[in-house]
Image (cartoon, rainbow over all chains, first blue to last red; front, top):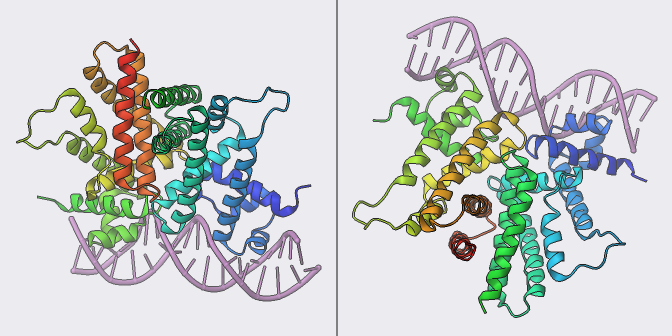
Length: 194
Length: 194
DNA sequence: GTCTATATAGTGATAGAC
DNA sequence: GTCTATCACTATATAGAC
């Protein structure tokens, strides 16, 4: 199933989750994938190529698990879908951890590397709009501006909570509580502000 | 006024704001401070010593500017003090930028460096409690748990917005709007939840 | 205290055999 | 496609003169 290239990308995701984008050493990646450094360079040209491919790989995976559902479960209502989408990012599974870590690193790196900002801004916009849309399904009468702002607050909060979790300042269960409550608060505000 | 050591620490703060904690090169720091690398090592022992001293230095500075006030202005009410404290972190002055950048880097680095976590958790706790206290001044009847959670959401959101700002995904003025509105939302929730 | 070398080690990247 | 060497360069850190 997994060809060698995929094996390397999975290994890269694990190394990034462990050391960060800026802490990734090609030699460590090679060891993690069980291959030589030369093979890494054969497949990815250079360090930046490794990073680009891995970030794409992680992004694709995130899209998948985000829309993944238990086929037996009843279909979610709009509010349930919103909660699931946001809380899915606060879970202690290796893949979510890897994805959240990579995303946080991408953001943190973009502070010092303008080359990354364009991609990041685009991904952020898509993410914000997805949440705004879900909020709109719960409150169809709310104005577009109010929805957009609520979405931005929720996604920015999620990033803040996620980083606190990953950096050991906040237990995961507490992060989830805070996030769920924030959704509640924003929704109730959208109800009142007609 | 500024002795040579302080000059180096100021230079280090600038370099960290430009390159990040993990991107700081001793040679660049030496050039920025206008001294030799050997002198840096003379004063700070090693790379980690530079980082520790600089982070402390930045932390002290943050404490100062946070409590800095215009002496002519009328005293702030509880709500104004809350808003000022939080919005002060979203300003485009070199020092706030340096401090916010360093704080974000400290958090991002702690994801991969457990040694940093203890300091970080302590600083986070102090910061959360300060905000909880200010919230309590606005709503003296609110329960301690509700105050603590609102404070955590506000500070985590601030970190998320700050990182988005610094990474070029969010204009500063918009970040300020979102933050101000979040304060409003949390305060109105504290009013309702008796 | 401060500088000019310079030692030492790590790290990205390539050459060339198989 | 994959490996074993190995090069070239960068970065931390130190020695020793002033």
